[in-house]
Every structure is written in structure tokens, then in C-alpha cells.
Length: 371
Image (cartoon, rainbow, N blue to C red; front, top):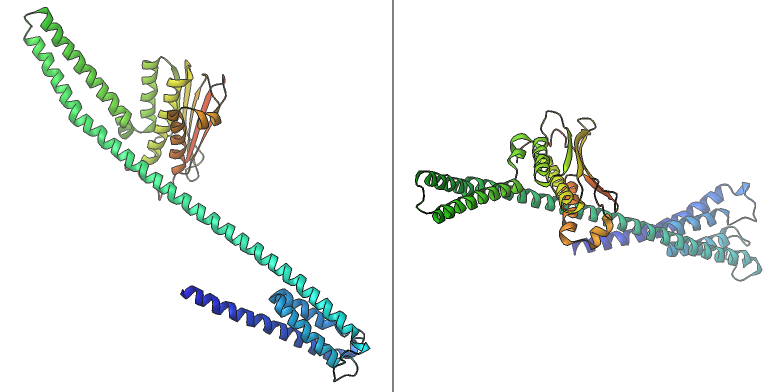
């Protein structure tokens, strides 16, 4: 409410100023005309006052322009047309006044139209800028929210991984060892009992393997202990052993560890890209490159995962692929975007796939390896 009152007062004062400019412009034009009257021919009495009409209309709009036109017409009639010192009324000498009045009115209408168009254009530009700024603010808030969600998710994955490792897995390992010792120390009386005991031990061993796989999927310990390059190398070696895919690997990150958030983001992007290679590419060959590019201040870290498999059309995949595949691509892009990075997927049927992610390195003030 207070803003509306202030705006109304400001608008009223501005309108008064506009009409004041109209009166002042006409007065200034008349004064200038009177001062240089000897240098100006008498058949051009409206030379200066016409300029005053244009200034008034451009600055104040139609109302001040018309006011300046009326004042200029009357003043010209009174000061410069015979009989000087009186109004000519509707005499023959008033024809130039009528023409001047019509011209002034036309100029006022045109100037007012141009002024209104300019104001509308300025308002549209201002609204567009406000909308752009609002969209940028919303994008920043959404990015911050996604970032907090991903951080929370990663912390929860870390917590679950350590709980499974320190709780369930250790209990299963102890039970496995007890059963193994029991089988060695107390041979069973029958072949059937021995087979059942051995089957129980085998199932428990498989359970331990599954628990360790789950821990690695939740949060690989190598990532926390040795960094991104080592964790990704371990993942590549596991794919070679389990999937039979020849995956090349190059890493050039230097000796200094990357920030924890950057390591986590790039690892999960690589994990998702390699999972797609194993599930969908039907290839026997892939290659992973992890490198630091640029200088220390404005540098970035680049990840490339290339395969020579079936390939696909990325845009069709995003719009019509399986839900899990769409979510995977979207998740990789979102993870990169949270840290100000980009992710590109280049592929075509029969031509393999290239996933390239590049994330800028934070400044030294922002850098900190923590969780």
C-alpha cells in the first residue's frame, strides 16, 4: 500500500514537471525570439516556438505538447503578428496561426506516439530482463537444491556402505569362518549332511560376495582411500575380469587430489557410462580417458568414455528410450551441471558412443577435500 501511495505521488509530480517544461519551453523560445528579433525575418515568427512544441511533446507527451501548442499560438499572435499587442482573432492574418496550430497538434500526436512506443519498448525490455534474472535465480536455486540432494544422497550411500561393511558383512564373514572351522573339525556322519553343510557354506560365501558388490556400488572404498584415478582404474579392471570387455584406461590428474565433490561426480558419471557400455553397447572394446586440462586457476577435469558398439540416437533415447536409460543420461547431465560442468553424448547407430564430461576446477578458496 505504501508503495502505491509513493508511486502515485511520484507520478503526480512528474506530470506537473512535464507541464512545467511545456510552459518553460514556450517562454524560453519567446524570450530568445525577442532577443534576436532583429536577426530573424518577420515571416518566420514560429521558428523558435515550434521547437518548444517539439521539446514539450517529446518530454511530456500529448498533453504538454498540446498545451505548448496553444500557448505558442497565442503568444505568437500577441507578440509577432499585426496588430502587435493584441489578438488577431479570425482575421485573414490568423491563417498562419491555424496552420501552426495544426502542425503543432500533429507534431504533438507524433511525438506522443513515439514517446509511448519508446516507453513500451523500455518496459518490455525491463520486464524481459526481470524475467531473465528471475529465471537465472530460479535456476541457481534449483541447481543448489539438486546439489544438496546429491550431497545428501552421497552421504547416505556412504553411511549405508559402511554400515553394511561393518555390520552385516562382518557378521556374515564370522559366520562363514565358524562354519568352515566346524566342517573341518567335525566331519559329518553322512554324505548328505556333509553336502548340506557345504551348500550352506557356499551360499554364505555368495552372500558375502553380494554384500561386497553392494558396498562397492554404494560407495567404493578406493574412492575415499586413494582418489578418483585409482577408483576408476579398479572399476575398469573389474569390467575386464567380469564382462570380458577390453577397456583401455588413461589417467593424467597429477599427484594432487581433486576436491571430494568433483571426484564423486566424475566417478558416478564414469560408472553410469561404463554400465551403459556393459548393458547396451554389445562391444568388445572401450576406452576411458581422465585428464586435467588448462592451468591451475582456470583449468578443468575432462572425462571421456568411448566404445565401438551398437550406438544410438541420443535425442531419440532421451524422448523414447527405456525409463532407466533416460534417467541415466539425465542423471549424468545433472551431476555435471551442479558443479558448473557440461556433459555431451555423441553417438549414432553402428558408430559407437562417446560420453564426454568436463567440469571446471574450483578456485583455491573453494577447494577443500572433505566428504
